[in-house]
Amino acid sequence: MAEAQRGIRINKYLSAAGICSRREADRQLEAGNVRIGSRIADVGSRVQPGDQVYFQGRLVEEEEERILLAVNKPRGIVCTAEKREKDNIVDFLHYPKRIYPVGRLDKQSEGLLLMTNEGEFVNKIMRAGNRHEKEYHVTVNKAVTDRFLRGLSGGVPILGTMTRKCKAERIDKRSFKIVLTQGMNRQIRRMCEYFDYRVVSLKRVRIMNIHLGDLPVGHYRQVTPQELERLEQMLEGSSNETVIFESSAVNRQLWEEEE
Image (cartoon, rainbow, N blue to C red; front, side):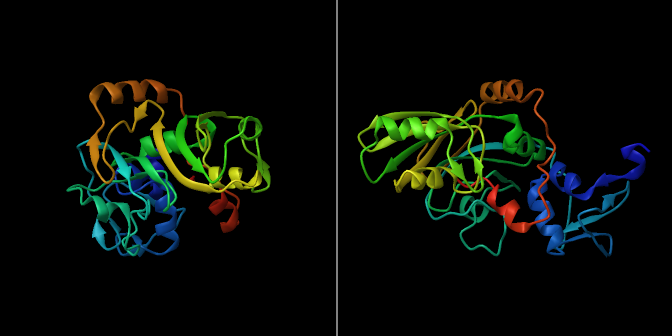
């Protein structure tokens, strides 16, 4: 049976409408915050033509304008649209239209965060299997050695698996840059801890072709048409399917992107 006849999965509907990512939609569904008409929706629910969907009590209406922002997230701000989190990024920015973050940065990390109203961007950029690059500048508590950099680059056993091989290069005595193609929970911090290093500061400076540049902390800018065109070229052929986690909530938490 065609998808049009069966309806659209509720998490995909919310993502396409610019409400939140599919992952966040699943969280909200589990919390009972989504209704289709008068019925509380669950993760397996589908939206049929003519259905009215309510998210946290408000009617969902699709946003026609395409929004993609580059944000310089400060430390202490949480990458979530959840209003119950007092330091959430959405309230911090006070953007006049509904947007949500593409992936996460740890609360104590700073730097480049993309925010959008388009769910397909979120899914294609976040999905680890697409292997899109994210670059970070990291300061640690002692001298960066060649052995340490080789160890980071070769893969590190954390969270019951080996990290992918990556690029790591010294910036100065106690700082280095690292380019990852995956996003495990607190990955860089855990990788450093494996070699007995402690992260003092962590800043994301690039996501694919989008650079932080000299954007001030706490500010945002529109992604330029040229950047957007190149980004779309880089995303061609990328899967927009959400990552399927095992049933364990712990397992899902471990793989959420929080460098």
